[in-house]
Image: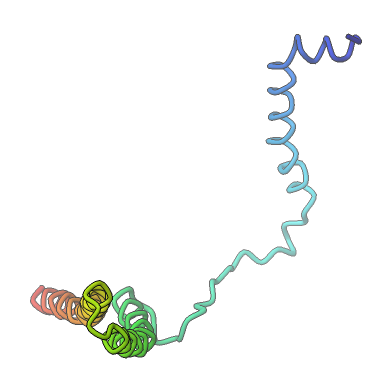
Length: 134
């Protein structure tokens, strides 16, 4: 074992602390090199969404609209697929059970999809009523 390896093994904690110290100090050393007179500190974050979306309830409403626009055609296709499974079962009880499960889970998903919109509207109405009374 050479001397450098022996030194590194013996003083591992000291080297780790020195390494962390250098990592913490190094970024601050470069920050002092900037001329503060030419720096504009007025930073604004641009809203990547539509300018009309500026509150959380409005954001949730717009997100649910997008989910519904995607979800309704998917539910329609799933219902058509479950109907196809019923036709292809041809009296086979195992395949009929699979088709019934597919239809049931599709209808549960559709209920959740539409129920989320109803719940969101109810919560938004409740919040607006509370705001108007105070």
